[in-house]
Length: 127
Length: 328
Image (tube, rainbow over all chains, first blue to last red; front, side, top):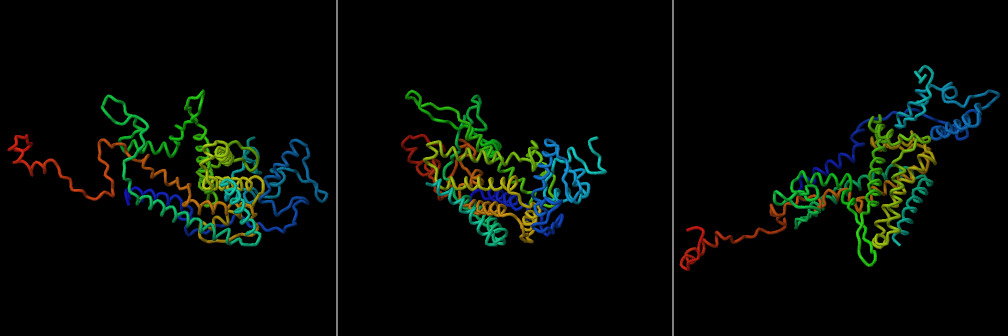
């Protein structure tokens, strides 16, 4: 090989970069952030399909925002009760943020910008 | 012809993944093919580079795009005609990171029967946008192959999505990659000269990358998949502790299969310019051909009859004839 030293050095650097995930995780066992089990037809509050929640919740929140901010329709009625279409007072009224949002979001490396304005109970908000 | 063939090939690949997943071959598309692809990619890449390394460079052929190092009062163009290793490193860095030689791209045209040349920066801009965004997209995907996700990966994601458009937030590089890929394709269609020399081997990788980008964008914004399960699969691949969780949408397997094909195809295609650019003798040689003699490495040892030896042999005869000699 001509210029073997340089070429092999370059190849070693390349392979080291390309196989980064393999040695960075060598021997690790990864814990899942949550187990989500739902039947295909299971509904949350009557019309929110549970099975889609993990992949579709951002669409729902987006849709709620439009309905509340533009349409003024603030509540879902279910079983005679009213539920607020709200992240803070709706979802986080029952679910805990750490378990319900943060764990999976940290795991998947997705930082939603919900929390630039909204905040969970007990957190310091913008106010 | 090449265009149609490549388009059909990429669509067929996506269809294969679709049908395969519908038939329940999750292990094949989720585990076996990705592993095979990465093995073929690494082994093929190394073999190709080693093969190139074994080829001698018989001639000293750096392209000279500026004044060579000459007399002290003539200004040398150190980047375009480097005479030192440092200059070559500078030249290579600009070439690899900023595609400097494409910046020099000229368009030839006929105007009033005369040939004219004009600067044409679109190819430079399009390919730089394409490569850089593809690179950022690739690095961003480390969030699926690390746990916990390192801060710098999150930071790239935050910078990429700083427009904060929609949920999930729009990542600009994805859009730029698709747009630049589209430009590179349209260039092959509408530029007659480029179209004439374009082959299936040019269209296929382009369509494949566009297919990868398209399936990724569809998956992120439109046909959602359960990202936690996707990461369970990818982390399984990275930790060599494989499993295919139930309930990941078929679009993910199409995305993964197209990427697997891209990786496996890489070492045998024009995409090897990733390694090739580092080994381009027209770029990576020092232009010191007047200072240092470049010897063709395959030349056999030739015994040269030097003047000293010649004089030693004929000194007495030369003296007799009155020819001046250097050594008495």
